[in-house]
Amino acid sequence: MQAASSQIAERISSISVSSTMKVSAEAERLRSEGVDVVDFGAGEPDFPTPDNIKNAAIRALDQNFTKYTAAGGTAELKKAVVERHKLDFGTDYKPNECLITVGGKHVIFNLMQALVNPGDEVVIPVPYWVTYKDVVNYAGGKCVFVETEEAQGFELTAAMLEPHLTARTKLVIVNSPSNPSGAVVSREEFEKIFHLTHSKGIYLMTDECYCKFLYDSEPFSIASMPGAKESVLVAGSLSKTYAMTGWRIGFGLVPAPIVGAMTKLQSHSTSNPTSISQKAAVEALRGPQESVGLMLAEYRKRRDFVLGKLSQIPGVRCAVPQGAFYVYPNISVALGKSGIAGSLQFSERLLSEASVAVVPGEAFGTDEHIRISYATSLAELDRGIDRIHQFIVKYS
Image (cartoon, rainbow, N blue to C red; front, side, top):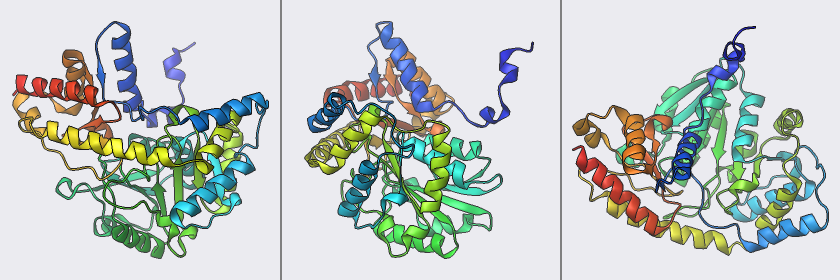
């Protein structure tokens, strides 16, 4: 019998271990050994799930709502999703154009598997969320990367995008606000991107995971554009908006035939999302929305605090994030002076020597940055950024 490692299917080699999960696991290992780690790695709200949502889950348990549901989610939750999206953004989806998934990452995976054939090109702006590249590769597609400009806050424009579109382009991915940079595509520019892709018969996937967390503009969805339902694919999540990361509820708003294809796949993989979580999600969408604004106000305060602290570190510069809850500082000067070879080694040594966990920019397509999540307390941000400051000065 050959070694087990030689028996692993070849398709698994097309994907990598999630860098954010890897950082979190290493930070947790050090904490278990008694190390005082400041963790800026996980993209997870530090706020508790609102009580009304938790109480809805308790009611579901009391009512024994613990059986299988339809593979693509309950009719009640699909209706709540389309109603919420219409209230927030003015869209007009029907429940048969909605799929409920096990988190936002799951809907993106299902979309790529349902749409991307081997050799199809998928256009991805840089920096990008780590999973995009891997799910495209796993589907046999070809990633085409579009470099954005740090000086312009990493905002994607239609002019940047157009030269990368070919006869083989199947899909363009836009994540606004962006993970990792916090970049926001303005409504005007997003409309130009939509008109460009729509005119060429190319799908436009809008990842709306952070859509409620914008600092200087009003939330909107490109899916509200006239004619958008034909080619715009909405990937949504309750994880960040309602501090429900562990509940694992995401959704897709896409043409009904694509829902059918994705549901077919889901019926043979995860089957239905957790029944109890679906009841909690209905309450999240239909219940009070005040918690979202409260979280946004706190994120703004933290963002401004972190930017102020980073500006005091010699050689570090940082584009101002317009949304989400990350900063993406450029550490190239620090790298050059220290002799540290790239963001991965920087992050590894920062964790081992200064006990601060960040995600290397290498994971997001740039090697001169690190991602810092400010979804944690001001006290943790203060001492963590101080440690980064001291680490960089030590090697400068």
